[in-house]
Every structure is written in C-alpha cells, then in structure tokens.
Length: 309
Ligand code: GDP
Ligand code: ZN
Image (tube, rainbow, N blue to C red; front, top):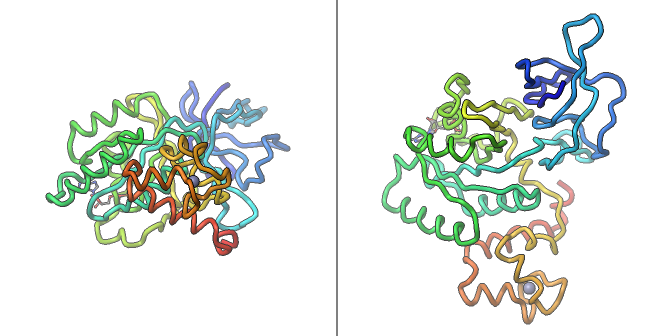
C-alpha cells in the first residue's frame, strides 16, 4: 500500500494512506540513497507499506525516489545531515513588517535556499492588521523588489477570513513548506487553515527566543482543501548551507542571467573589472538590498569560521 510519511517520532512513522493514518516502522536493512543522513525517512517521503505478519502494525519496505528534499547539517553530528522534508512543491516564507520585523537579509537567505532546492517560493507578509503607514511603505518596496524578480508576494492577516481563503487557493493540492522566524504567525495561520489542528501559538512576549523549538522533527499537516503543510523547526539550521563562494550568485535569481557577461568566469561580483552584476547594480537594475544580501552571504561563506560551524 502506498502512503506518505507525515510525521516521524524516531522509530515510528505516521503515514497517510487510503486507509487513513497508519503507524509504521522500518524493518531490517533499509536501502536508500546514500546521503549520510541521521534520518532514513523524512516527512513527505512516499513509501510502500506491508502489514506485519500476525500484527496490527505496518512495515515500510520501499521508498519512492524523492523529487526534492531540504537538508541541513545535523545539530548533534556535524558530519551528518538531517532531511527536513521531501517532495515539496513550494515554500511559503512567512515574514512581518513589524512585531517582529523580518529583515530582507533573512528573506534573501531563505529565497537562496529555495533556489538551491529548485522550490518555488512566495513571500507571505503577515499581521497587516497592525501595520502603520511606515510598515505599508516598507511593504510596497518589498513587494516591488520581489515581484520584479519573479516571486509572489502576499499581504495578509491571519485574523482576516478573506486573506486565509486566498492562501487556501495557493495551497490547494500542493505540499508547502512554511518557514519564517518564530513569532511571525506561522502556527496562527496554520490553525486558521486547519481549524481542527489547534497548534500551540506563542504569546507575543515569548518570540524573543528566536529559533527555540520543542521538537527537532518536522511535521506535515493535511489541508482540508487538499495538500499538505510542512511546519519546520530549526530555521537557523535550515539557513546553514554548504555552498562555495562562486555558487552564491547562481541562487540569486536575477543575477543568474547576468553571469555569462562577466569578464571572468570565476567573478565574485565585488570589485572585479567588467562585472555584469556590479554594472546592473550601478544601473539600478539590481536592488540595493539584494546586492547587499549577496555580499553578506558571500562574505560569510568565504570565511573559515563558516566551514567550522
Ligand atoms: P509562529 O512562531 O510563527 O508560529 O507564530 P505564532 O503563530 O505563535 O504567533 C505569534 C504571535 O503573533 C501570537 O501572539 C499570535 O496571536 C500573533 N499573530 C499571528 N498572526 C497575527 C496577525 O495576523 N495579526 C496579529 N495582530 N497578530 C498575529
Ligand atoms: Zn561579476
């Protein structure tokens, strides 16, 4: 029987199948792609189940090839990876203009990760109900910047029914990863989309504990309109990716097409002569904030410390 892994509790996997939710485990030696991972299966994996002889439980005996997956370094073992989720159709990057204020630096970092994994991303800017003029002004600039380079941008309030309906339209029949700092309203939005779920939300005062999470496992939630949401812990680890300095610009979607026009093929687009990226920046064709984020990420991945993390 075919099923989808929607939760992992260590040795047991909760799978969604035609017969509803089923508990299953891996038995014996299980062959999968050699990714040097701490978890052989991740939420989103499509698996095949067999009933265990004489038991009520199921055994996972096969996994379908993953369309894509998001991986991070294991927090406990730096030589191993942890698969956060697989078979994703899109990323919803949830941010806010205030309470808390999401930086474009963070957005660009997350968008870079989405590009690395070939996952289309949409910016979801939440809490519009509390914005002041200056927040709307900042939002307008952000909307322009990101729509210009091909990303969808939605302004919503988790408390507004029409906004939630609009999100439902974008989520229907897709598997969507929700990412964003703690406190931006991910759980609140998910609770609105799936009223039966009742995820715990945090009090406004507690979101200073950025990155603090109770679980290290991702979880998938079935949407009433069809499709799944993946709620991921550990946004910090997610942002820690192994990447060469030369690669960074490949994942800035508006820079990608300019690269063949740089004089040097190992150009890092800083001070090099005849650099097409820098030229675009000078000509105001590349947003200041985006170029700034690029330089910051470049500096980070070029530093020795980065590789020692
Ligand atoms: P998470 O850490 O991203 O899951 O954030 P939570 O869902 O726990 O929300 C953090 C706080 O923001 C809670 O106090 C929510 O009630 C509040 N919140 C979430 N969405 C909205 C919104 O659209 N407007 C307002 N005013 N507050 C919101
Ligand atoms: Zn260049």
